[in-house]
Length: 76
Image (cartoon, rainbow, N blue to C red; front, side, top):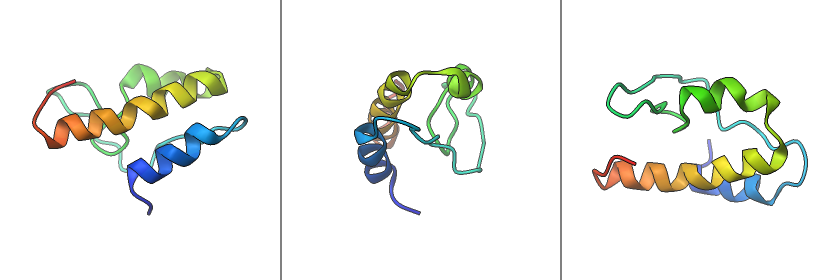
């Protein structure tokens, strides 16, 4: 599996059919409400299939920041 940053960079460049960041290891964190595997909120996960490609690219752009903040011990 490619690192999140690499997957995000690819997804952000896609104009159509932006893929889901899900890697089938769902585990919601109580501390911040984010999935520990894909870094999305429950709302983002549940609305993903109805989002526009632009909305999906925006979320992909936020995922890298969320993971970096977590690594550095900051809750986003």
